[in-house]
Image 1 (cartoon, rainbow, N blue to C red):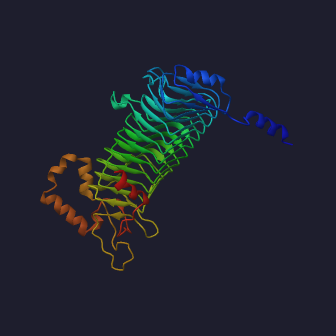
Image 2: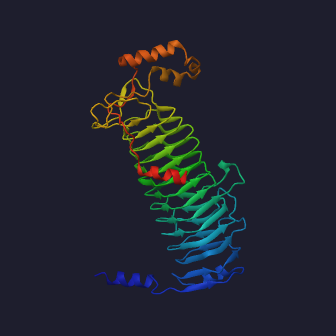
Image 3: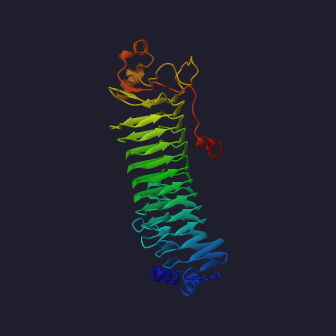
Length: 418
């Protein structure tokens, strides 16, 4: 029989909840919280409330889109320590400036359970939302603008996630500050459909296995999506436009899926892999970068199929003495600089594509050799290799290159968000 358990759950959950209208005066929120019961909603009158709050019981704090809570530069403005708290419709300003204390607009501690932070505006706080150990947190539909009065590395993050399994961060607009989302030592997190601008990294991922980064847009940041020291991550259907260094970076990241992403106009590299192994790169669009994709430090056993490399100054940078095949089951990738022919019209080039030759290897290892690019000796070496492929030193080969570039659905976001 489960009757005792059922009865206990009924008494633990309020059978009805009250709404409290909170007047705009000093200390009014704290006074009302002291009278409210579990499950009640506090509706704030329009205006500015100069308070810092600690919420330890399941209540809803609703600013109705017109109430501002100002921490006046001391600590975190709102700290959630209890279960079932919802914060919505608030403008939150005025956190402290202490990195050790992670002074935030909203801080969700390890004793919070399933907190919801939705449709708020957080401006000028050191950190926007700190999910610090809270399980199953939801941070949705917020506008977060970080500090601009410090150098970028001295600012806090828009959303900081630490040891917060089950956290979902979605539909937020995050600007300024340091990193849009910084996650460390967590798992089973979802970061989706967020917009990131004017940051160091859009998403900065460390030690956070079994998670998803999907449908996000990064515009004009130093780096788009950085996945480090992590396994089994899905980086799918994201967009990077004009990020200054790389669109997607994998550093000691393994067994992950990078699919359907669009990287356009990264100054250095669309994608950079450093000691990243056994990952799947499928159906991505890499366009207009200094380097389309760069492998280094022993990145091996990665599957590269169905991607489009469009107009990158160097399509692939990969140094090896052996050939690595980038096609599978008769299907490879699209290369905009490959003057291919397709006699039988099956959509597959009739000759293999080799993106690099021995002169590329020399130029990568000896940059001063670029002075010789126009010399007859260099032209002779390149002509010899094209005429006699056996002279090529090894590297990437795509035996079944695509004639037409496959377009991922995320490409539709570029004209609108770019």
